[in-house]
Length: 538
Image (cartoon, rainbow, N blue to C red; front, side):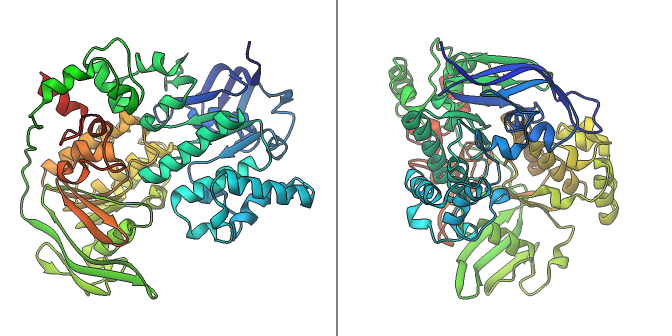
Protein backbone atom coordinates (compact mmCIF):
# COMPACT_ATOMS: atom_id res chain seq x y z
CA UNK A 1 0.00 0.00 0.00
CA UNK A 2 1.37 3.42 -1.00
CA UNK A 3 2.32 5.88 1.72
CA UNK A 4 0.81 9.38 1.35
CA UNK A 5 3.31 12.22 1.28
CA UNK A 6 0.54 14.81 1.62
CA UNK A 7 -2.89 14.59 3.20
CA UNK A 8 -5.73 17.14 3.05
CA UNK A 9 -8.47 16.45 5.58
CA UNK A 10 -11.84 18.25 5.18
CA UNK A 11 -10.24 21.52 4.02
CA UNK A 12 -12.50 24.55 3.68
CA UNK A 13 -11.19 27.89 2.47
CA UNK A 14 -12.47 31.27 1.29
CA UNK A 15 -10.44 34.31 0.23
CA UNK A 16 -10.60 37.57 2.22
CA UNK A 17 -13.83 39.45 1.59
CA UNK A 18 -15.35 36.57 -0.38
CA UNK A 19 -18.29 34.74 1.15
CA UNK A 20 -17.96 31.87 -1.35
CA UNK A 21 -15.94 28.81 -0.42
CA UNK A 22 -13.20 28.22 -2.99
CA UNK A 23 -12.48 24.86 -1.35
CA UNK A 24 -15.46 23.19 0.31
CA UNK A 25 -14.76 20.13 2.48
CA UNK A 26 -11.87 18.86 0.34
CA UNK A 27 -10.06 15.68 1.33
CA UNK A 28 -7.18 14.30 -0.71
CA UNK A 29 -4.24 11.94 -0.28
CA UNK A 30 -1.16 12.12 -2.53
CA UNK A 31 0.88 8.94 -2.71
CA UNK A 32 4.66 8.90 -2.57
CA UNK A 33 6.19 8.82 -6.06
CA UNK A 34 2.91 9.50 -7.87
CA UNK A 35 2.42 11.77 -10.88
CA UNK A 36 -0.87 13.51 -10.10
CA UNK A 37 -2.63 15.73 -12.62
CA UNK A 38 -5.16 18.35 -11.46
CA UNK A 39 -7.62 19.57 -14.11
CA UNK A 40 -10.78 21.65 -14.22
CA UNK A 41 -12.29 24.88 -15.38
CA UNK A 42 -10.89 28.29 -14.49
CA UNK A 43 -12.14 29.26 -11.04
CA UNK A 44 -12.58 25.65 -9.89
CA UNK A 45 -9.89 26.07 -7.24
CA UNK A 46 -6.89 24.30 -8.83
CA UNK A 47 -4.33 26.96 -7.93
CA UNK A 48 -5.82 27.37 -4.44
CA UNK A 49 -5.63 23.62 -3.88
CA UNK A 50 -1.97 23.52 -4.94
CA UNK A 51 -1.09 26.49 -2.74
CA UNK A 52 -2.42 24.64 0.29
CA UNK A 53 0.47 22.19 -0.13
CA UNK A 54 3.20 24.78 0.47
CA UNK A 55 1.33 26.94 2.98
CA UNK A 56 0.76 29.97 0.74
CA UNK A 57 -2.88 29.25 1.58
CA UNK A 58 -3.62 30.53 4.17
CA UNK A 59 -0.33 32.09 5.41
CA UNK A 60 0.16 34.43 2.46
CA UNK A 61 -3.37 34.75 1.08
CA UNK A 62 -5.22 35.20 4.38
CA UNK A 63 -8.92 34.41 4.41
CA UNK A 64 -10.84 31.76 6.36
CA UNK A 65 -9.31 28.30 6.57
CA UNK A 66 -10.61 25.11 8.16
CA UNK A 67 -9.53 21.48 8.23
CA UNK A 68 -5.95 20.24 8.12
CA UNK A 69 -3.17 19.87 5.55
CA UNK A 70 -0.22 17.64 6.37
CA UNK A 71 2.92 17.30 4.28
CA UNK A 72 4.83 14.37 5.70
CA UNK A 73 4.41 14.88 9.43
CA UNK A 74 4.13 18.68 9.19
CA UNK A 75 0.87 20.57 9.76
CA UNK A 76 1.09 23.42 7.23
CA UNK A 77 -0.69 25.82 9.59
CA UNK A 78 2.00 25.29 12.23
CA UNK A 79 4.96 26.44 10.09
CA UNK A 80 5.67 29.27 7.65
CA UNK A 81 5.84 28.66 3.88
CA UNK A 82 9.62 29.17 3.94
CA UNK A 83 9.93 26.21 6.31
CA UNK A 84 7.83 24.07 3.98
CA UNK A 85 10.16 24.83 1.07
CA UNK A 86 12.35 21.91 2.16
CA UNK A 87 9.36 19.61 1.68
CA UNK A 88 7.50 21.20 -1.25
CA UNK A 89 9.09 22.74 -4.34
CA UNK A 90 6.65 25.09 -6.09
CA UNK A 91 6.79 26.34 -9.69
CA UNK A 92 4.36 29.07 -10.76
CA UNK A 93 2.73 29.73 -14.14
CA UNK A 94 5.03 32.68 -14.80
CA UNK A 95 8.67 31.72 -14.10
CA UNK A 96 9.75 35.37 -14.18
CA UNK A 97 7.68 35.96 -11.04
CA UNK A 98 10.13 33.85 -9.03
CA UNK A 99 13.42 34.95 -10.65
CA UNK A 100 15.48 37.10 -8.30
CA UNK A 101 19.09 37.05 -9.56
CA UNK A 102 21.09 37.87 -12.69
CA UNK A 103 22.67 34.45 -13.27
CA UNK A 104 21.19 31.01 -13.74
CA UNK A 105 23.52 29.31 -11.25
CA UNK A 106 22.89 32.04 -8.65
CA UNK A 107 19.14 31.58 -9.16
CA UNK A 108 19.42 27.86 -8.41
CA UNK A 109 21.54 28.57 -5.34
CA UNK A 110 19.30 31.32 -3.95
CA UNK A 111 16.89 29.07 -2.05
CA UNK A 112 19.78 27.08 -0.59
CA UNK A 113 21.40 30.27 0.66
CA UNK A 114 18.17 31.28 2.40
CA UNK A 115 18.09 27.92 4.17
CA UNK A 116 21.71 28.18 5.33
CA UNK A 117 22.92 25.13 3.41
CA UNK A 118 26.74 24.73 3.72
CA UNK A 119 28.63 26.14 0.75
CA UNK A 120 30.20 22.82 -0.29
CA UNK A 121 26.77 21.15 -0.33
CA UNK A 122 25.28 24.13 -2.14
CA UNK A 123 27.83 24.00 -4.97
CA UNK A 124 27.30 20.27 -5.40
CA UNK A 125 23.52 20.64 -5.62
CA UNK A 126 23.75 23.50 -8.11
CA UNK A 127 25.92 21.35 -10.38
CA UNK A 128 23.49 18.45 -10.00
CA UNK A 129 20.54 20.61 -11.00
CA UNK A 130 22.36 22.19 -13.95
CA UNK A 131 23.09 18.71 -15.32
CA UNK A 132 19.71 17.18 -14.43
CA UNK A 133 17.73 19.94 -16.16
CA UNK A 134 20.10 20.39 -19.12
CA UNK A 135 21.12 23.91 -18.10
CA UNK A 136 24.91 23.63 -17.74
CA UNK A 137 25.57 25.61 -20.92
CA UNK A 138 23.35 28.43 -19.61
CA UNK A 139 24.88 28.79 -16.15
CA UNK A 140 26.41 32.24 -16.81
CA UNK A 141 23.34 33.66 -18.57
CA UNK A 142 20.83 36.04 -17.06
CA UNK A 143 17.37 34.42 -16.73
CA UNK A 144 15.90 37.46 -18.52
CA UNK A 145 17.77 36.46 -21.72
CA UNK A 146 16.43 32.88 -21.78
CA UNK A 147 13.48 31.49 -23.69
CA UNK A 148 10.26 30.66 -21.86
CA UNK A 149 11.07 26.95 -21.76
CA UNK A 150 14.58 27.61 -20.45
CA UNK A 151 13.28 29.93 -17.73
CA UNK A 152 10.73 27.35 -16.67
CA UNK A 153 13.46 24.71 -16.38
CA UNK A 154 15.51 27.14 -14.26
CA UNK A 155 12.49 27.59 -11.99
CA UNK A 156 12.16 23.81 -11.66
CA UNK A 157 15.88 23.46 -10.93
CA UNK A 158 15.63 26.15 -8.23
CA UNK A 159 12.70 24.35 -6.61
CA UNK A 160 14.46 20.98 -6.86
CA UNK A 161 17.77 22.18 -5.39
CA UNK A 162 16.36 21.96 -1.86
CA UNK A 163 15.59 18.25 -2.45
CA UNK A 164 11.85 18.50 -1.74
CA UNK A 165 9.64 15.45 -1.38
CA UNK A 166 6.98 16.95 -3.66
CA UNK A 167 7.29 19.12 -6.77
CA UNK A 168 4.15 21.19 -7.41
CA UNK A 169 3.71 22.93 -10.77
CA UNK A 170 0.87 25.33 -11.58
CA UNK A 171 0.32 25.32 -15.36
CA UNK A 172 4.04 25.30 -16.16
CA UNK A 173 3.56 25.15 -19.97
CA UNK A 174 0.85 27.80 -20.36
CA UNK A 175 3.25 30.42 -21.81
CA UNK A 176 5.47 28.12 -23.84
CA UNK A 177 5.81 27.27 -27.51
CA UNK A 178 5.51 23.57 -28.45
CA UNK A 179 9.26 22.97 -28.17
CA UNK A 180 9.53 24.67 -24.78
CA UNK A 181 6.48 22.81 -23.49
CA UNK A 182 7.90 19.46 -24.57
CA UNK A 183 11.20 20.30 -22.83
CA UNK A 184 9.45 21.03 -19.55
CA UNK A 185 7.14 18.01 -19.65
CA UNK A 186 10.06 15.74 -20.53
CA UNK A 187 12.12 17.16 -17.65
CA UNK A 188 9.27 16.67 -15.17
CA UNK A 189 8.73 13.13 -16.45
CA UNK A 190 12.42 12.32 -15.89
CA UNK A 191 12.23 13.57 -12.31
CA UNK A 192 9.27 11.28 -11.68
CA UNK A 193 10.61 8.22 -13.52
CA UNK A 194 14.29 8.40 -12.62
CA UNK A 195 14.13 9.83 -9.08
CA UNK A 196 10.67 8.70 -7.98
CA UNK A 197 9.84 12.31 -7.13
CA UNK A 198 6.18 13.01 -6.37
CA UNK A 199 4.73 15.36 -8.99
CA UNK A 200 1.53 17.38 -8.59
CA UNK A 201 0.75 19.33 -11.74
CA UNK A 202 -2.19 21.54 -12.75
CA UNK A 203 -2.57 21.91 -16.50
CA UNK A 204 -5.20 22.82 -19.09
CA UNK A 205 -3.52 21.44 -22.23
CA UNK A 206 -3.93 17.74 -21.55
CA UNK A 207 -2.40 16.57 -24.83
CA UNK A 208 0.98 17.27 -23.24
CA UNK A 209 0.62 15.54 -19.91
CA UNK A 210 -2.37 13.19 -19.66
CA UNK A 211 -0.42 10.11 -20.73
CA UNK A 212 2.19 10.77 -17.99
CA UNK A 213 -0.29 10.88 -15.10
CA UNK A 214 -0.82 8.02 -12.65
CA UNK A 215 -3.99 9.65 -11.35
CA UNK A 216 -6.16 12.65 -12.16
CA UNK A 217 -8.24 14.91 -9.93
CA UNK A 218 -11.04 16.66 -11.82
CA UNK A 219 -12.43 19.79 -10.12
CA UNK A 220 -15.66 21.56 -10.97
CA UNK A 221 -16.62 25.14 -9.99
CA UNK A 222 -19.67 23.62 -8.26
CA UNK A 223 -17.33 21.93 -5.80
CA UNK A 224 -17.67 18.41 -7.21
CA UNK A 225 -14.46 16.36 -7.27
CA UNK A 226 -13.75 13.20 -9.27
CA UNK A 227 -10.59 11.13 -8.80
CA UNK A 228 -9.51 8.37 -11.17
CA UNK A 229 -6.87 7.05 -13.49
CA UNK A 230 -6.05 9.05 -16.61
CA UNK A 231 -7.99 6.60 -18.79
CA UNK A 232 -11.01 6.63 -16.47
CA UNK A 233 -11.16 10.43 -16.49
CA UNK A 234 -10.69 10.46 -20.28
CA UNK A 235 -13.85 8.39 -20.55
CA UNK A 236 -16.08 10.78 -18.59
CA UNK A 237 -14.77 14.35 -18.84
CA UNK A 238 -16.28 16.71 -21.43
CA UNK A 239 -14.46 15.89 -24.71
CA UNK A 240 -13.61 19.57 -25.19
CA UNK A 241 -11.00 19.18 -22.42
CA UNK A 242 -9.41 16.03 -23.85
CA UNK A 243 -6.35 15.62 -26.06
CA UNK A 244 -7.62 15.52 -29.67
CA UNK A 245 -6.72 11.83 -30.09
CA UNK A 246 -8.82 10.97 -27.03
CA UNK A 247 -11.67 13.21 -28.17
CA UNK A 248 -11.68 11.54 -31.59
CA UNK A 249 -11.83 8.09 -30.00
CA UNK A 250 -14.77 9.22 -27.87
CA UNK A 251 -16.52 10.66 -30.93
CA UNK A 252 -16.05 7.36 -32.81
CA UNK A 253 -17.40 5.38 -29.87
CA UNK A 254 -14.25 3.39 -29.12
CA UNK A 255 -14.33 1.44 -25.86
CA UNK A 256 -10.64 1.98 -25.10
CA UNK A 257 -9.59 5.65 -25.11
CA UNK A 258 -6.00 6.35 -26.27
CA UNK A 259 -4.15 9.01 -24.31
CA UNK A 260 -1.29 9.79 -26.69
CA UNK A 261 -0.39 9.92 -30.38
CA UNK A 262 1.53 6.66 -29.99
CA UNK A 263 -1.48 4.84 -28.53
CA UNK A 264 -3.75 6.28 -31.24
CA UNK A 265 -1.45 5.26 -34.10
CA UNK A 266 -1.30 1.67 -32.85
CA UNK A 267 -4.99 1.34 -31.94
CA UNK A 268 -6.66 -1.64 -33.59
CA UNK A 269 -9.44 0.49 -35.11
CA UNK A 270 -7.09 2.97 -36.81
CA UNK A 271 -6.76 0.80 -39.92
CA UNK A 272 -10.47 1.27 -40.64
CA UNK A 273 -10.21 5.05 -40.18
CA UNK A 274 -7.21 5.31 -42.51
CA UNK A 275 -8.97 3.18 -45.11
CA UNK A 276 -12.10 5.36 -44.96
CA UNK A 277 -10.07 8.56 -45.36
CA UNK A 278 -7.75 7.28 -48.08
CA UNK A 279 -7.54 9.63 -51.08
CA UNK A 280 -9.76 12.17 -49.29
CA UNK A 281 -9.09 15.65 -47.92
CA UNK A 282 -10.97 17.92 -45.51
CA UNK A 283 -13.66 20.17 -46.91
CA UNK A 284 -12.22 23.62 -47.75
CA UNK A 285 -12.94 26.41 -45.30
CA UNK A 286 -15.58 28.94 -46.22
CA UNK A 287 -15.15 32.48 -44.93
CA UNK A 288 -16.31 35.90 -46.02
CA UNK A 289 -13.25 38.12 -46.10
CA UNK A 290 -13.63 41.78 -47.01
CA UNK A 291 -11.24 44.51 -48.03
CA UNK A 292 -7.74 45.10 -46.61
CA UNK A 293 -7.36 46.59 -43.14
CA UNK A 294 -3.69 46.13 -42.29
CA UNK A 295 -0.82 46.04 -44.77
CA UNK A 296 2.85 45.59 -43.82
CA UNK A 297 5.53 45.58 -46.50
CA UNK A 298 9.24 45.02 -45.90
CA UNK A 299 8.76 45.75 -42.21
CA UNK A 300 11.79 45.61 -39.92
CA UNK A 301 12.73 46.79 -36.45
CA UNK A 302 15.67 46.33 -34.13
CA UNK A 303 16.88 46.81 -30.58
CA UNK A 304 20.25 48.49 -30.84
CA UNK A 305 22.24 46.43 -33.34
CA UNK A 306 20.04 43.36 -32.85
CA UNK A 307 17.40 42.86 -35.54
CA UNK A 308 14.17 41.64 -33.94
CA UNK A 309 12.37 41.03 -37.24
CA UNK A 310 13.11 41.96 -40.85
CA UNK A 311 11.48 42.04 -44.28
CA UNK A 312 8.06 41.01 -42.95
CA UNK A 313 5.03 41.20 -45.25
CA UNK A 314 1.68 40.81 -43.53
CA UNK A 315 -1.95 41.48 -44.48
CA UNK A 316 -5.14 41.35 -42.41
CA UNK A 317 -8.51 41.85 -44.10
CA UNK A 318 -11.94 42.69 -42.77
CA UNK A 319 -13.42 39.58 -41.19
CA UNK A 320 -10.15 37.63 -41.44
CA UNK A 321 -8.62 35.65 -38.57
CA UNK A 322 -4.82 35.58 -38.88
CA UNK A 323 -2.72 33.56 -36.41
CA UNK A 324 0.87 34.64 -35.80
CA UNK A 325 2.98 31.71 -34.59
CA UNK A 326 6.62 30.93 -33.85
CA UNK A 327 8.97 29.98 -31.04
CA UNK A 328 9.40 32.11 -27.93
CA UNK A 329 11.71 34.93 -28.97
CA UNK A 330 10.85 34.78 -32.69
CA UNK A 331 9.51 38.37 -32.65
CA UNK A 332 5.73 37.86 -32.42
CA UNK A 333 5.05 40.32 -29.60
CA UNK A 334 7.35 42.96 -31.09
CA UNK A 335 5.60 42.60 -34.44
CA UNK A 336 2.23 43.15 -32.75
CA UNK A 337 3.59 46.22 -30.97
CA UNK A 338 4.82 47.56 -34.31
CA UNK A 339 1.38 47.09 -35.83
CA UNK A 340 -0.02 49.13 -32.94
CA UNK A 341 2.60 51.86 -33.30
CA UNK A 342 4.22 51.17 -29.93
CA UNK A 343 7.44 50.02 -31.62
CA UNK A 344 8.70 52.14 -34.52
CA UNK A 345 9.69 50.41 -37.74
CA UNK A 346 13.28 50.89 -38.87
CA UNK A 347 12.30 49.95 -42.42
CA UNK A 348 9.19 49.17 -44.42
CA UNK A 349 5.65 50.48 -44.68
CA UNK A 350 2.63 50.15 -42.38
CA UNK A 351 -0.79 50.95 -43.81
CA UNK A 352 -4.10 50.72 -41.97
CA UNK A 353 -7.48 51.23 -43.60
CA UNK A 354 -5.78 52.59 -46.71
CA UNK A 355 -3.73 55.24 -44.87
CA UNK A 356 0.07 55.16 -44.49
CA UNK A 357 0.66 55.08 -40.73
CA UNK A 358 4.40 54.34 -40.81
CA UNK A 359 5.45 57.66 -39.31
CA UNK A 360 2.37 58.26 -37.15
CA UNK A 361 2.36 57.71 -33.41
CA UNK A 362 0.35 55.05 -31.59
CA UNK A 363 -2.44 57.53 -30.84
CA UNK A 364 -3.42 57.68 -34.51
CA UNK A 365 -4.72 54.10 -34.29
CA UNK A 366 -6.50 54.52 -30.94
CA UNK A 367 -9.99 53.10 -31.21
CA UNK A 368 -9.45 51.57 -34.66
CA UNK A 369 -7.24 48.76 -33.31
CA UNK A 370 -7.93 47.19 -29.92
CA UNK A 371 -5.11 45.40 -28.12
CA UNK A 372 -5.09 42.73 -25.42
CA UNK A 373 -1.52 42.19 -24.12
CA UNK A 374 -0.10 39.06 -22.53
CA UNK A 375 -0.72 40.58 -19.09
CA UNK A 376 -4.40 41.56 -19.31
CA UNK A 377 -4.36 43.02 -15.79
CA UNK A 378 -2.52 46.04 -17.22
CA UNK A 379 -5.81 47.12 -18.85
CA UNK A 380 -7.74 47.34 -15.57
CA UNK A 381 -7.90 50.32 -13.22
CA UNK A 382 -11.52 50.39 -11.99
CA UNK A 383 -12.94 48.58 -8.98
CA UNK A 384 -15.84 47.05 -10.95
CA UNK A 385 -15.50 45.10 -14.16
CA UNK A 386 -18.64 46.78 -15.53
CA UNK A 387 -16.94 50.17 -15.17
CA UNK A 388 -14.01 48.98 -17.30
CA UNK A 389 -16.36 48.33 -20.21
CA UNK A 390 -18.28 51.57 -19.69
CA UNK A 391 -15.05 53.58 -19.62
CA UNK A 392 -13.93 52.11 -22.96
CA UNK A 393 -17.33 52.76 -24.53
CA UNK A 394 -17.38 56.38 -23.34
CA UNK A 395 -13.84 56.97 -24.56
CA UNK A 396 -14.81 55.66 -28.01
CA UNK A 397 -18.18 57.50 -27.96
CA UNK A 398 -20.22 54.33 -28.53
CA UNK A 399 -23.09 52.62 -26.74
CA UNK A 400 -22.55 49.23 -25.10
CA UNK A 401 -24.76 46.68 -23.34
CA UNK A 402 -22.39 45.68 -20.55
CA UNK A 403 -24.40 42.69 -19.37
CA UNK A 404 -24.79 41.29 -22.89
CA UNK A 405 -21.10 41.67 -23.71
CA UNK A 406 -20.01 40.08 -20.42
CA UNK A 407 -22.46 37.22 -20.96
CA UNK A 408 -20.86 36.55 -24.37
CA UNK A 409 -17.57 35.77 -22.61
CA UNK A 410 -19.28 33.87 -19.74
CA UNK A 411 -18.67 36.65 -17.22
CA UNK A 412 -22.24 37.86 -16.76
CA UNK A 413 -21.92 37.08 -13.06
CA UNK A 414 -18.78 39.23 -12.69
CA UNK A 415 -20.06 42.73 -13.54
CA UNK A 416 -19.73 43.88 -9.92
CA UNK A 417 -16.48 42.01 -9.23
CA UNK A 418 -13.05 43.65 -8.99
CA UNK A 419 -11.01 42.50 -12.03
CA UNK A 420 -8.07 41.46 -9.82
CA UNK A 421 -10.36 39.02 -7.99
CA UNK A 422 -10.83 36.99 -11.19
CA UNK A 423 -8.75 33.94 -12.11
CA UNK A 424 -6.11 34.12 -14.85
CA UNK A 425 -8.44 32.77 -17.52
CA UNK A 426 -11.30 34.98 -16.35
CA UNK A 427 -9.09 38.08 -16.55
CA UNK A 428 -8.20 37.20 -20.14
CA UNK A 429 -11.86 37.06 -21.11
CA UNK A 430 -12.59 40.23 -19.13
CA UNK A 431 -9.86 42.08 -21.03
CA UNK A 432 -11.29 40.99 -24.38
CA UNK A 433 -14.77 42.15 -23.35
CA UNK A 434 -13.27 45.48 -22.23
CA UNK A 435 -11.61 46.26 -25.57
CA UNK A 436 -14.58 44.99 -27.62
CA UNK A 437 -16.72 47.57 -25.83
CA UNK A 438 -15.01 50.18 -28.05
CA UNK A 439 -16.19 48.50 -31.30
CA UNK A 440 -12.76 48.39 -32.98
CA UNK A 441 -12.15 47.62 -36.68
CA UNK A 442 -9.34 45.24 -35.78
CA UNK A 443 -8.54 43.18 -32.71
CA UNK A 444 -4.94 42.35 -31.81
CA UNK A 445 -4.36 39.67 -29.16
CA UNK A 446 -1.10 38.45 -27.66
CA UNK A 447 -1.50 34.89 -26.29
CA UNK A 448 -5.14 35.39 -25.23
CA UNK A 449 -5.68 31.73 -24.25
CA UNK A 450 -2.73 31.63 -21.85
CA UNK A 451 -4.00 30.15 -18.59
CA UNK A 452 -7.48 29.59 -20.05
CA UNK A 453 -9.28 26.29 -19.59
CA UNK A 454 -10.52 24.35 -22.66
CA UNK A 455 -14.19 25.10 -21.96
CA UNK A 456 -13.69 28.85 -21.91
CA UNK A 457 -11.18 28.67 -24.75
CA UNK A 458 -13.87 27.09 -26.93
CA UNK A 459 -16.28 29.81 -25.83
CA UNK A 460 -13.71 32.52 -26.55
CA UNK A 461 -13.16 31.15 -30.04
CA UNK A 462 -16.93 31.34 -30.60
CA UNK A 463 -16.85 34.99 -29.47
CA UNK A 464 -13.96 35.76 -31.81
CA UNK A 465 -15.76 33.96 -34.63
CA UNK A 466 -18.76 36.25 -34.18
CA UNK A 467 -16.41 39.25 -34.04
CA UNK A 468 -14.82 38.10 -37.31
CA UNK A 469 -18.21 37.57 -38.95
CA UNK A 470 -19.12 41.17 -38.06
CA UNK A 471 -16.24 42.36 -40.25
CA UNK A 472 -13.58 42.93 -37.56
CA UNK A 473 -10.13 41.69 -38.50
CA UNK A 474 -8.37 39.54 -35.89
CA UNK A 475 -4.59 39.20 -35.54
CA UNK A 476 -3.54 36.86 -32.77
CA UNK A 477 -0.10 35.71 -31.60
CA UNK A 478 -0.35 32.26 -30.07
CA UNK A 479 1.37 28.93 -29.40
CA UNK A 480 -1.90 27.03 -29.33
CA UNK A 481 -1.64 24.87 -32.45
CA UNK A 482 -4.86 22.95 -31.81
CA UNK A 483 -6.88 26.14 -31.47
CA UNK A 484 -5.33 27.74 -34.57
CA UNK A 485 -6.13 24.64 -36.63
CA UNK A 486 -9.79 25.01 -35.77
CA UNK A 487 -10.43 28.72 -36.23
CA UNK A 488 -7.74 30.57 -38.20
CA UNK A 489 -8.20 31.58 -41.84
CA UNK A 490 -4.48 32.09 -42.31
CA UNK A 491 -1.30 31.27 -40.39
CA UNK A 492 1.94 33.29 -40.46
CA UNK A 493 4.89 31.41 -38.97
CA UNK A 494 7.88 33.44 -37.78
CA UNK A 495 11.38 32.05 -37.34
CA UNK A 496 14.41 34.07 -36.28
CA UNK A 497 12.65 37.35 -37.05
CA UNK A 498 11.36 36.57 -40.53
CA UNK A 499 8.36 34.85 -42.09
CA UNK A 500 9.22 31.20 -42.80
CA UNK A 501 5.75 30.04 -43.86
CA UNK A 502 2.38 31.60 -44.66
CA UNK A 503 -0.90 30.11 -45.82
CA UNK A 504 -3.98 28.28 -44.64
CA UNK A 505 -3.68 26.13 -41.50
CA UNK A 506 -3.63 23.04 -43.75
CA UNK A 507 -0.72 24.47 -45.75
CA UNK A 508 1.38 25.67 -42.79
CA UNK A 509 0.64 23.16 -40.03
CA UNK A 510 0.48 19.90 -41.98
CA UNK A 511 3.57 17.71 -41.90
CA UNK A 512 5.40 19.56 -39.14
CA UNK A 513 6.94 17.73 -36.18
CA UNK A 514 6.08 20.36 -33.54
CA UNK A 515 3.83 23.04 -35.05
CA UNK A 516 1.07 20.63 -35.95
CA UNK A 517 -1.89 18.93 -34.31
CA UNK A 518 -2.22 15.49 -32.77
CA UNK A 519 -4.66 14.48 -35.52
CA UNK A 520 -2.15 15.40 -38.22
CA UNK A 521 0.56 13.40 -36.45
CA UNK A 522 -1.73 10.37 -36.60
CA UNK A 523 -3.37 10.73 -40.03
CA UNK A 524 -1.00 12.97 -41.99
CA UNK A 525 -2.19 14.67 -45.16
CA UNK A 526 -4.10 17.87 -44.47
CA UNK A 527 -6.19 16.45 -41.63
CA UNK A 528 -5.85 18.73 -38.60
CA UNK A 529 -8.90 18.56 -36.33
CA UNK A 530 -11.31 16.11 -34.77
CA UNK A 531 -14.23 17.91 -36.45
CA UNK A 532 -12.73 17.42 -39.92
CA UNK A 533 -12.38 13.67 -39.38
CA UNK A 534 -15.82 13.23 -37.81
CA UNK A 535 -17.48 15.18 -40.63
CA UNK A 536 -15.64 13.12 -43.26
CA UNK A 537 -16.67 9.85 -41.61
CA UNK A 538 -20.28 10.96 -41.32
